[in-house]
Length: 323
Image (cartoon, rainbow, N blue to C red; front, side):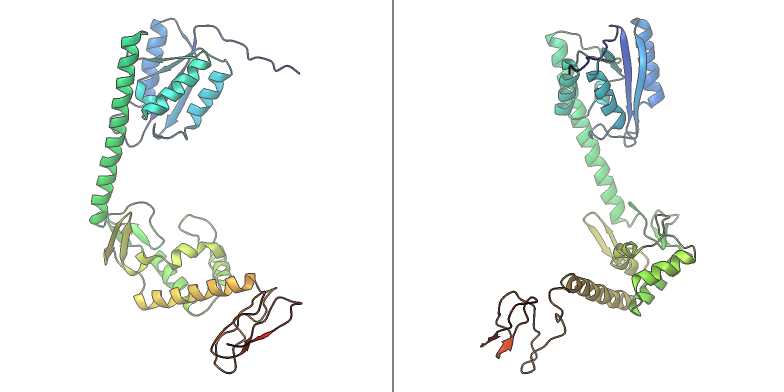
């Protein structure tokens, strides 16, 4: 069965691609970019069939839904020209920009930069490559500046990223305690220290209409990050920045450490339960002579300081081993 080729559009059919990165404060808005492209299309007798726009998406990423859709439509033969504001809209990385330009070229699609006229000759292509290199430098330099700003803010204890349950952003930009929610955190830690199961705590919180920090119902897996989060004892953490006492504590260190021990033990028990069908006596059988723990093994093993017997898989014969 022959595959039907896509219908070829008229030579003056074009589309517009616009992108806005939330990190770039001087970027023209989507509306401004589209307006410039419409003006160019009108001046060159081009018909715009569709507009693709990615909002608050970096040009350093391939994860741009509208851009990827435009590429697919180009390869389906739906248009012959892509209008975009400047060369840095396609990609900030030079290699990526060249790769996409080549891919569009193979599909019979030409890319036109409305505010940058490089010319369709050797000199123009050289100028375009140089501009792409500058775009990449600008992008990398901006990323370094952003990271430097984040690290500087972190050293001052400023709120960065997600805010854990029990905290809010204070007027000074630092963490402040959200008392009603902080009480929920204290309650969870207290109940875990009293050996209540996570499932029971989750059921109770849900029954009371209390949601997680992400506005979702509680489940057994909702507590893993919360119960091990050092921020609750006042340790500020962001990237490589760690500041003891860098934020207000919600619980005491003694309660936190007690809960860490409970969490560790529960994880050990959960690990033993995975092998429960094979080794029923794990954690329960000890040598009567030296007190060493006995462990499940598919073959006899040497344990402790005396003659012991390992318990093997069901059906295997237990064999005493002399130390």
